[in-house]
Image (cartoon, rainbow over all chains, first blue to last red; front, side, top):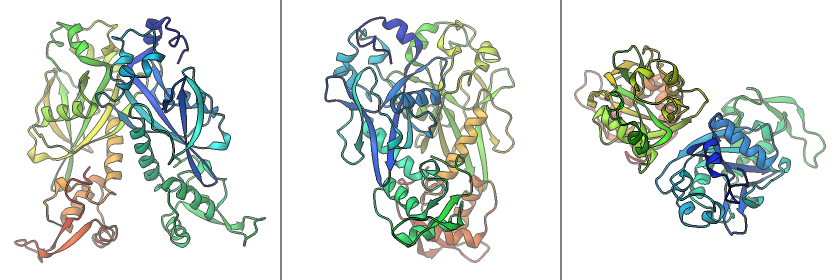
Length: 248
Length: 248
């Protein structure tokens, strides 16, 4: 998004670059160790928080628009993004017509598509939050991680978008190999369990978890143990479908 | 879709009714007894087949646009529609710029959005095909059922849309209660199995199927049997989550 919009200049050209009434919104879940966090932007000079998002260029696929949005906000270039839902209710972004958003898009004529219903395609990504350099966009004061359970209320229908993204992420966990990019190539059962617990938001029984993971297949126990821990060295496992095949 | 477009009249007004560059495409799977079929339109005077679809009015939600499209093509008003993916690749509808489509939209200026990339939101429905009255739209000669495995190649990226819809439908089967609207309120295990077999496109082992359905819960065996068949009367079951809760 060009900062020129904020300054009220050159709107028609800007608006013509993009497919009207269309955007992508990106739910970036951050995981490291045991916590799940959410990447949010805080709008300039306002107590308004929102998901990273962007418009879609006429020569840009939806996937590419989401990829570039998240790359710009995180600095991560190899991303496992998944499209999960298109949000197109009437009035879903009416805050933009009524509220804080007007102060950002000061130069936009009220009959422009920016002030009408925008259909937004939701994407989510699950990344190691230690690898991310959160970077605000030109309309934001900050870009930062918030605990998934305790973030501020979000603009537009973004709370609903987050809820649906979390549903989709949880469903994706059912596929063996999900989350492979967040685990070492050879991982222990406790490491896999912590990922599942973070996404599901609740503790899991160790023995049931291990049995379920082995029963459903797609995972192989190696004849090696993780060395160096204080406890008895746990066995190492790997996903048999490869690291890329069934990721989120 | 107004037939006026076909006659090359009054384009600007028509185009202003709808959100530019946006459409819905509907994959209507028809089930009855054991077969799975696909509802397709054949374009007027051409050997081009495509999914039922439509544009999205400025005061219409995505869900409503899909609902109305399918209602008009099927005559069914209570529908279990599910949005499954947004299709937004560059060039996904370029047939429209190059081929048969030009003969339909004869009056449309080439710089109109109809000739550029349109992002389409995919919806699917699973209906009893005996209840449907297939009704062509103004651009089509016919609207008819085709076997899922033997339908003609489709326009644009519609074959890809069908493949993804089928993936989504198969995943939905994993949820207990899926397909409740296609079964009687009290159904037999063979009836449930035929639905699963039709969607999965392969026969299932009777005993494994029964065990898996009972193990996953959400289903209750009643103290009643279906009467009147030639074989030993099978037990009746019902979904415990209600008929609407977990439908497709």
